[in-house]
Every structure is written in structure tokens, then in C-alpha cells.
Length: 357
Image (cartoon, rainbow, N blue to C red; front, side):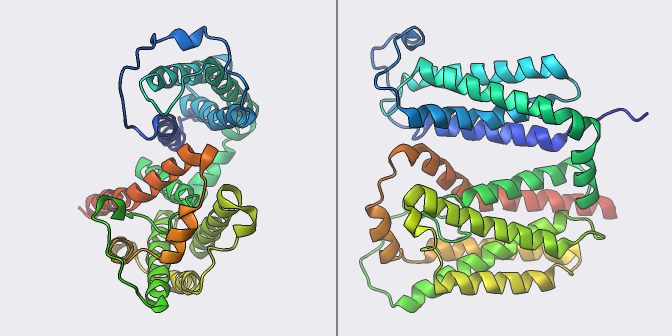
């Protein structure tokens, strides 16, 4: 009987999600100072009144994936009660440390209720993992699906995490469709020069096409040659479109769920899909440099383009409110993603070089 192996993908996902939780909890990472408050007084303080139901629910939901992934990441080394205990302990410790750090952030409020909500979320996630681990992990269904569809190796698992983060970045309504790598906030504010509408149509199309091509080809590089590569790529693009629409509907306004659909975005998606259907048949040696070129083009376009006055006016009136930290998190992932993807391409190229040596 073959010895069960731990899931590298689950471990990567656990670490990635933990980092996301840290960023969301400490955003905006500015204004650190000692406010003269006892470091751990919030632990025994009365619950703040009135209790914000949204915050409690958000904290519970935010830690469910952490507890779930903690169990999967330690399986089969830790089974049953041991895995459950680790997941709950991880959730409690992470919440306690982050809440303690919030004491020194003037824009955040440390709360013992948040710790309880986070612990509850981690516990629910751990229970869900225990319920699904036996039929899925013991029977090898998840591993079998992953092994049948994608190439073997930890670097491929890392690529799958990277694609998951690309999908997550589409939950930022402030970014262009498929847009990543926007560093314009770090640059000098552009002049008030007026541009014709055709410029913004081309920008939308270029960003959507180049980024869609890069992400889709990256997915194609991870799929085994005997599997439906084009179907996987189309599913990735469709999921990204659904995520972007969901972001507008939930975070901005339910009536704005389709406002991101511009002529430029439609042209860009159509062009990306057409190119992907052709490029999916190329050998991996040709796909890797094409991904790099697409990433460079998309990042250049999104940073050199003037800001769209319509979008600027729309989001200047947008009250982010309770979603401020979540939006900061999605924007960070969107900014960093293309640069992380470029580094990942180096790893894939190194794999290919080692295989040919």
C-alpha cells in the first residue's frame, strides 16, 4: 500500500491565505504609534457596543478558509483530533497576535469579540475539513483530480496558487478588467489633459487582452498534454469575468453588476480568447516567452495610460465603508501579481532547462 503524501498545493494555499489575513488585518500599515493603551487590555475588556453584526460575520467567514486549509496542509501528518487542534490553535494565535498589533494602529480597534469570531470561523473551517478530508484525501479524489489534470511537481502547485490569486485580484472593482500591476498611485499625478474616448477603449481592450492571454497561457502551461487544455483556459477566463461582476454587484452597488462591461473590455476578452485557442496548441517553449511578453505589455499599458475620468468620478463617490480592508487587500494582490508571475516564469524556464540538460 502506497504511503500517503502531504499535499504541497494545500500547504501553499495555507501560507498564501495566512499572508492575506495578515494584510487584511493590518491594512493600511501606516501611522504605527504607542497610543498609551495597555497592550493586552482588550482581551478582558467588555464587548464594544453596539455589536456590529457585519464585522462579526466577516470575521467568522474570513477565518473559515484558514481553519480548513490548516487541516489539509498538515494532513496526513496530523489526522483527526490532532489536525483539528492545530487548525483551531493556529486561528486563535493568528487572531490574538494580529489584534494585539492593532493596538498600535490608530485606524484599527483591537477587540476580544474579533478573536472569538475568528476562533469560531477557524473552528468551523476545521470541522468542514475533517468532514471532507476522509472521503476526499483518504480516497485520493482531490489528489487524483489534480494529478490527472495538471503536471506533477511542487512548482506546478505554486502556479495553481498564482492563478488563484489572479482570480482573487479580479474582486477589485477599482482595477480594469483583468488589470494588474497598476503602480500609477506611486507616480506623480498626471496632468488634466483631455483624451478622446477611443484612447480609453484601446486601453481597456489592451489590458484585458494582454492579461487574459498571460493568465490563460500560464494555466495552459500547467495542464497535461492529454487533457482538455482549452476547456481549462476557458473556465479560468469565465471565472475571472464572474468574479469581476460579483465585485461590482457586492462591493459597489447591485445595480452596477454589469457596468464594467465596456466595448473595450469586450474586444479585449474576445481577442484574448481567440489568441488562447491558437496559442494553447503551441509547445511550452513558445508559450513561456509569449506569457512574458503579454505580462510586460499589459503592465506597460496599465501604467502608461491616462486615468479614465469616468471611472475616477465614479469611484470618488464610492463609499467603501466596511469593505475598506478587503478592497485594500485585492488591490495589493492586483498590483503585485504580474511581478510575481514574471518570477514564476523564471522557475518554469529553469524546470525546462533542467529537463533538457
